[in-house]
Image 1: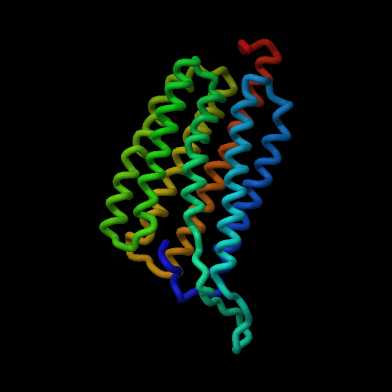
Image 2: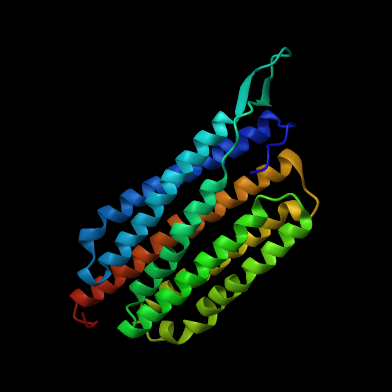
Length: 262
């Protein structure tokens, strides 16, 4: 991992500190909510909702690790002029936790969407494997460029990661269109919202990735990178998870009313 820049202001450090804290709070509270809701959905959707909670639990753990690493990487205190000053402590900031998190959670995010749609068993297995593997490859290809300062290397790995990225996004937008149309009335809009929220939140990641490729550097680039990834994570996991719960809840209600085959 590349050493942190030396030119940090207290405002920049604090902005990242608060973004990471927000990630912990958002993911942690979402986990509690999803698992408390398990008894309120039928058995057909409990696996999807359980996975939703696992995703946010894994993210909560990694945000704790990122947060602690961030705090340890700096010395913060009052300077001679009475204002807070921030200096690098020399302890490395381990941002690799993000990629470990994504490697575990990104495939699961797609699996929970596929499960809650309740597609035919063969189609469910096929989509879960193909999208899960493609998303894991996407994350693995992105990491080598993330830890490099050489722009040509960063662009190369970014382009490589975009290949499976485009495949996954294309499947969400086009490939699942017909399956979405077959969802029961009152659920179609929720499933569509979940698909497109995934696409929109995922589009944030490649743009944040190239922050350092387009001229930004030092503490400013790192600040935007950390805040951007944190906002995208909360949207893609906690907010997306709420939509998964809403779909499971709506379908469970229809099953109980006899309007949907169990």
